Length: 160
Length: 241
Image 1: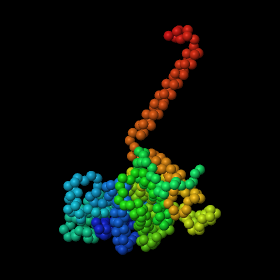
Image 2 (image 1 turned 120 degrees about the vertical axis):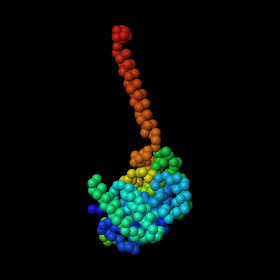
Image 3 (image 1 turned 30 degrees about the vertical axis):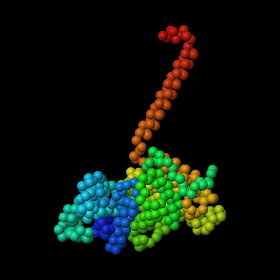
Image 4 (image 1 turned 180 degrees about the vertical axis):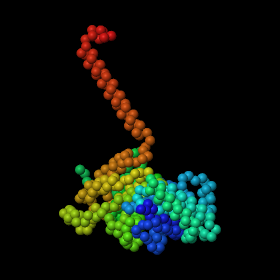
C-alpha cells in the first residue's frame, strides 16, 4: 500500500538534487531519474508559454492513467507583495526549486504534504551550513524528518 | 445536410460569448503533428505566432507522453525514455492543470482493419488513418473531468469530418457544420460542467420562469372568473355580494 510512489526535488536549472522512491514496482535507475527530472523542468517551462492568459506559473497537477503528479514550486503560492518579488530577484537561488510527488490517482491533500516537505527543506537543507546551493541534498536530518512526514501522511491516509 | 466547408481558408473564430468564456481554445492534431483544427474562444495572450504555437503544443504533448510512460509506477517493464510509442500503448495522461488553465487531452487508438475497408470503398488510399487524432481542449483551471466531453467531440469529428467525402486526410478541417456544432457543444458544456458559473445567469433564468408562472396563474384566474361570470346570472352575483 503506497499512496506516494516517489518524490523528486529539482533545482532551478533542472538538475535533480533529491530523489526517493517509496515502493513503486517500476523503480527507475539514477540516469533515468535525472533525465525525467530535467524533462519535467522543460515541460514545466513550456506549459507557461502556452498559457492563454498572463501569470501562468507552470503545471501543478498532471493526471496520468496510473498516477497523479503534484508539483510545487517554491515561493509561488498566492499573492506576493512587490517587495517579496524584489527579494526573490536578489536571492533567486530559492526561486524555481521544484518539488514533485508521484502518487496514486485521486490522492487528496498532496499540496499540504508538499508544503510540509518544503518547510523541511528550508529548515534542514537551506539552514545547513555545509550545504552548497544547487547541489544534491545529502542531509541526514532532512532524510529522517522526511521519512517521518511521509509515514505520518500514510497513517493519516489509512485513518481517513 | 450540408457537408461542404466554408469558402475562407482559416476557420473564422466565433465572437466570444459570455457563456463560452470558460473554454479557451482547442487543438486537433493528426498522427504526424499537423494541426488539423485550431479553434479559439477566449485567448487574451499570444506569445508566439500560430505555427510556432501549434508546434510547441504538439511537442509538449509528445514529451509529456514519453515522460508519463517512463514514470509509470505500476509497470515493471518500460522502454527507454523518448522512444515513440503506439497510441494506446504505455501509460498516457488525460489532463494537466496550471494556475491559469487546464489542458484535457485525448488520443484515439487506431482501428486499422475497419479503416482500410472503409476508405478503400470511398476511393481513399491505404494506410491513411484519419481516425487517429489527438484532441486538446484548454479550459478554466477549475473545470472538472472532461474525458467524456472529448469523446463526444471525437464523435462529432467522425460524423462531420471522417464521413465527409470532400475532406482530404491530413488537410486542415474546413467543415462549417463541424465548426458550428463544436461551438454549440463547447458553449453548452461551459454551462453544465464548469464550476465558476457566469454570475447572474441563473438568477435571470429563474426570474423568467417566475414571471412566466405568474402570468399563467393570472391568465387562469381571469378565465376562471370569466366562466364563473358566464354561468352565473347577474342576479346570482348580486346575491353573492
